[in-house]
Image (cartoon, rainbow over all chains, first blue to last red):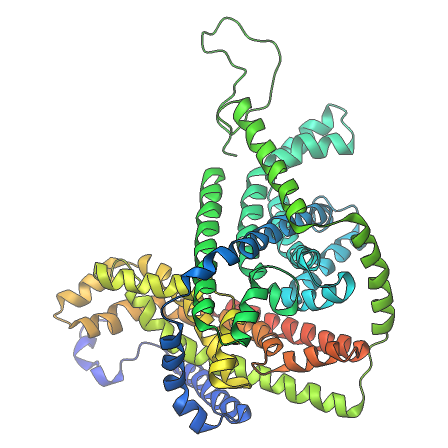
Length: 269
Length: 278
C-alpha cells in the first residue's frame, strides 16, 4: 500500500468501473435513439411546433382577464364535482373492503380468492377513470350517476391495494388473542383487525377522495357530470375568459381538498 | 396505533364507570358522533344534489348487461387492427417524447423548489409552478392545447409535459431536501462555484432518484398517453372514442384490452428497472 500513492495517475481514476460505465452509456444511447425514433413517429409538423409558443401566448393573452361574472354559474357544477368525488369514494370503499380482505395474504380464505382479489385490483387500476366514464355514460346515460360509478370503479383497485397492504402488516397476536376468547370470524374481524387498520383506512380514504376531486373535474368531457361539462362548452365556444375562470375554480377546489386530505392524514398518522 | 385517550378512565383514580369502552381518537364521544353524522349528512346531500335515483341505477344495470353482450367477444377487422397499431405507436411515442422533455424542464424546477438550495422568492416560484401543474388533470390541459395547437399528438405531448413537471419536480425536490448537506458543504469549501456545487455536490446524490423517477413517470405517461386522445390530442384514445361513438362496441372492447395490456407491460418494465436502480 505504502508508496503506491505516487504511482496513481489521476487520469486513471474513474468514479465507476468499466462495466457500470458501459451500462450507463448504453442506457443513455438507447434513450436517445428511442427519443429520436419517437419524435419521428409523431410526425410533428415543424411549422406547427415553431409557432406553438406564439399560439400559446396568444391564447393566454385572450384568457385574461378571467370572466368574473361567470363565477356564479359554475358554483353548481363545482359543487357537483366535489359531490361526485365524495359519493364515488364512499362507493369505492364499500366495494373495496371485501376485495382488500381477500387480497391480503393473511386474511384471504383460500388461494382462488387471493388471485381473484389481485385480479380485481389490477384490472380496476389499469383502466383510466375517463374510459370507465365512457363506458358508464352508455350504461347510465349522461350525468353525474355515470361519473360517480366510474370514479368508484376506478378507485376500488387503489383503495383495496393500499388497504390490503395495511391488513398484511397487522400484529397477528391481537387476532390470536380475540380468537382465544372464542369469538367467531366476524367478531375477530371487528375487534382485532378493524381497529388495527382504522388509521390507515382513514388516510387512504381521504387521500383517494383528494385524487378523485381532480379526476371528477374531467368527467364532464365525456358527459359524466361535474365542472368538465362547463369547461368543454367554454372551450368549444372560444370563451377563453370563462375557461380561465373554470381553471382557477378547479385550482381552488383542488388546493382546498389537498389541504383537507393532508389535515386528516396528519391527524391519524 | 395512535389512539391515546381512554375516556372511561376516571382521572380521580377511585371511581371507574365499570363499563369499558375502546380508546378513541376523538376529543370526546360527542365530537365523534358529530363527525359521523356530518359525514352521513354530507353523503345524503351529495345523493340529493346529484339526483341519483335507484330505478335509474337498476335500469342502467340492464343496459350494462346488454352493452356487455354487444362487446363480447372482442373483434376487429384487419383495417381496424392497423388503426390500433398506429394508435399504440403514437401513444408510445408521445409518452417517450413527453417524458424526456418533461424531465428536462422538471430538473431546474426541482432545484428551484428545494428549500435548502433556493432563496425564498425562487423557492416560492418553484412551488407555485409545481402546484399549478399538479392541480390540473392532463385532459384539462389537453383540451386547451388541442384548440391552441390543433388536433394531433403535439397537443398531447404538451399536456403530458405540463403534467410531468409537477409530479417529477415535486418528488425530486423532496429528495434534494433530504440529501446530505455535508457533501455540498465540502464541495463549496473547495471553492466551487454554485454551478459546480450543483454538479459535484447535489446531482451525484440524487442521480438514483432521478433515474427511478424517470422510469416511474414514463410508466405513468404511457397510461395517460392512451387517454388524451379522447379530447383529440393524439394516440389510441381517438380510436377508442370513435369506436364508442359509432356504437362499434366489440372493436371498442378490443382497444380497451390492448390499452390494459400496454399499461400492464409499462408497469412491469418500470417495476423491473426501478428494482435494478435502487
